[in-house]
Length: 120
Image 1 (tube, rainbow, N blue to C red):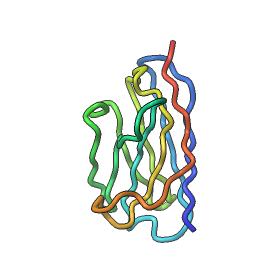
Image 2 (cartoon, rainbow, N blue to C red):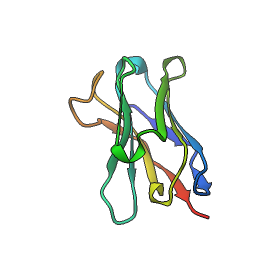
Image 3 (spheres, rainbow, N blue to C red):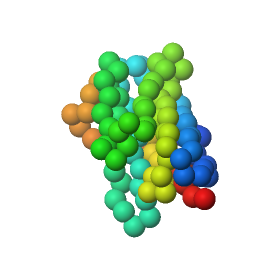
């Protein structure tokens, strides 16, 4: 069974930064695409960023130029560096693992989520 554990969320002022981490259990982490999604109150879950096993990345338009997804295969961890945060980035952020090296199918596994609140 794959477990994904997020950390790094919290309260930050507008314009600030946070770095989310997601530690994955299980073997063969490096062969799977990973992603970050978020869900704000009253809204549907949406894609934030994702990364293939080869390191190619894909971002939502709303976060391009501000967020960066990366992975450390030696540590079975994926990161989301969030800069220039805005109040509209407030949401629960979820880590996900896809079923293969890219994004052909929806994610197969989800973490429990970590709250990010951007407010002054």
